Image (tube, rainbow, N blue to C red; front, side, top):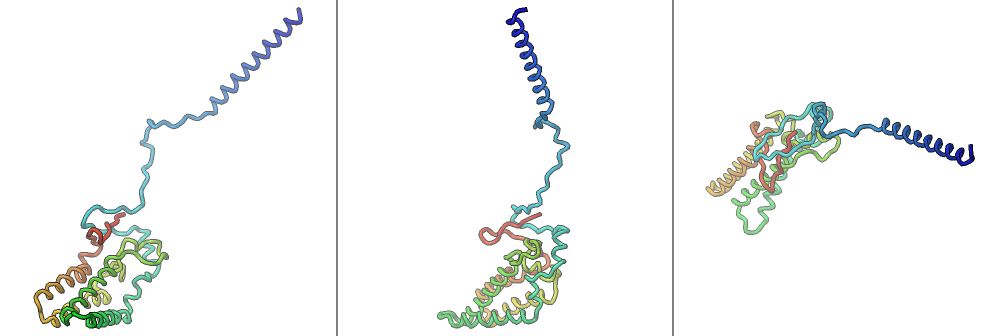
Length: 228
C-alpha cells in the first residue's frame, strides 16, 4: 500500500470522527434546551393578581368602605395623636378664643357694620371648621401605617362613635353662633338666610350620623373618594 493511500485513509477517519463529535454536541445541546412558554397555553391554571391599591371613585356621591382587618388593627393598636386633643377641655376653650379674635378683627375693619361683623365671624368659623374637620383627610404622622389616610378628622374622633361629649360640643358651637349672629344682625332676612345656609350645610349637616363616611365630589374643592 502506498504512502498516499495511508494518508487518505487517516484523513477520512479524522473527518468521520469530527462529524460524529459535532452530531453528539448538537444532540446534547438540543436535549438541554427548554421549550419557551407559548402564549397560547392554557391560562386556566394561572392565578389572578389582586390589586391592593386604592382606586378613585367616579361617582359624585359615594360612601367610603369599611377598613380592612389589618387597618382596623392598626387603628386600635396605637393612640391617634391627630384627634387626642379634641377630648381635652382646654381644647374646647380654644373655640371661644378663636371666635373672640375673629369678632375683634372684623370690628376693626373699616366699613363693616356690627351686623356684618357677626355674620362674617359665623361664616369664617363655619368654613374653617369644615376645612379642618371634614375636608382634610389622614394624619400628619406616619406612625400608623396609613390606616387613617381615607378618613377625615371628624371620622377619626372617638373612633367614629356618634354623639360623644366632644362631638356634641362641636355641633353645639356653630348652632349657638348662628343664634347669636341672627340676634345681633337684628333678624335681617338676607343675613338670616346667609347664616342659616352656611351653618346648616357647612357646619351641622357634615357632622350628622347619616353623613358619616359620605363623600360629595365638588370640582376644584374636594378630591374623588378612594375605594378599596
